[in-house]
Amino acid sequence: MADCKARLIKAESLITSLSKEKTRWKALSEQLTVDLVNLTGDILISAGLIAYLGAFNSLYRDEILAIWVKLSTERNIPNSGKFSLKATLGDPVEIRQWNLWALPSDDFSIDNAIITILPEDGPSLSILRDRLTSGFVTLVRTKNSRYSSSLTASISSTSRAPSAMDHLS
Image (cartoon, rainbow, N blue to C red):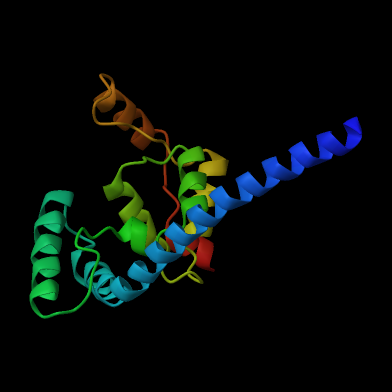
């Protein structure tokens, strides 16, 4: 009898948990439906950013992206309203791996990494991985009090810096 009661309690707990999951999955499904509709404009803006804005700083990029989002909305091209390359093309697992490699975690740096590794079959990511594991890449933050001396030491420690072409041959 006690065994039966224990099983009944576990079954009720399982049913309650599953009903909460149903609510969460339904909300996720609705969000994915909205994201699918907005994908057209977000991909269009992503293509523009990759093709035209990669060389510019974050302030200029943000200014132009705001204009593009506004124009997209005015022309009835669905978009998320607040554009993010990280949200549109980024892979959270891959981005987390970049952070574990000590790459900066700000949106501008992540956007630059996404732009750099596209297309996926390009050699950029493997070059970055090789450079990080070999100790060739040195991260120096501009807010570091020893920024200048760290940068000078990094530059002077290499007689000839390997180029990306070295890894392509």
